[in-house]
Amino acid sequence: MTDAEEFLLYEGCMIGQRLPYLEKSARLVFEKLELKPKDAAFGCCPDPIGIQCSDYTSWLSLGARNLTLAEAEGKDIVSLCNGCTQTLTVVNHELKHSESKRNKINRILKEVGREFKGSINVSHFLTYLLEEVGVEAIKAKITKPLTGLKVACHTGCHYMRPVEIMQSEEDHENPQNLRKVVAATGATIIDYEEEHLCCGYAIMNAEEDVSLRRLQKKLDSAINAGAEIFCVICPSCFSQMDFNQRSLKKKFEKDYDIPIFYLTELLALAMGYTYDEIELKMHSQKPKLIKERFEGGAA
Image (tube, rainbow, N blue to C red):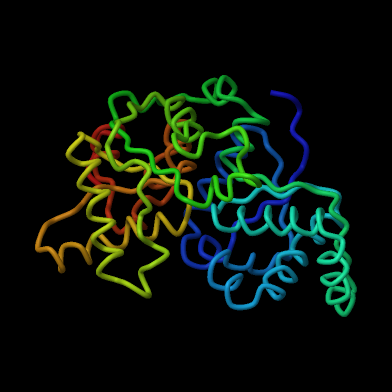
């Protein structure tokens, strides 16, 4: 690991407004790894599906405005969200490689005193940890290995797609990055048939029944394979998988209670932070096994 440079932390709307405890765990992990996140007056990324499909120009403009904030400070962006990473990366790519789009968006940005130059990069926090910190440096900070904890990994759709722009080093048909970092905590990674299945979040508002059936299929696959918890890297996936287990119970009359962890929460635990310090009580599906197995008490 080389000396870390400062970067601008992009937590996104869902984490910033609905899941602040995920941001807390990320900041604790960054501090332990001696990383240097800074804040900026970012706005919505915006949404890589809904906004892009309904108003492409607004999508480019809002994304570009966020990028210009980082350009003004000469610092790259590290995002805590799959969707935000996709939007900011794709907007950055589109405007860097299309003079006509860049000129059009800059005419709009000029009205608010900004200009896109294409001088910074965007990374997902998982990619940043692997490329700028490294697995061995992460392992060196592990003080409470999660030995014996059986984890099902869920990378999510937007982390790798579109593949020609996003993660060129990651195999989108068989992603390994999340597995590499989870393994560093000492946990056991469970193979399950539906690891690469979408969680269903994106279609919840349009097709709730389809969304819940997809979620059920994914959870059943991991549970039947022996998983005790899920680990995710996207707040939308976290929200779908944590909050909607109650909806599954109502719809299918079957209990679901598998805890969902953000990667930074899992890392924070393995780095010595407690159940209470990372506010695991805020989860819908309470990870009682963490309290009982690794802290010797009841949640």
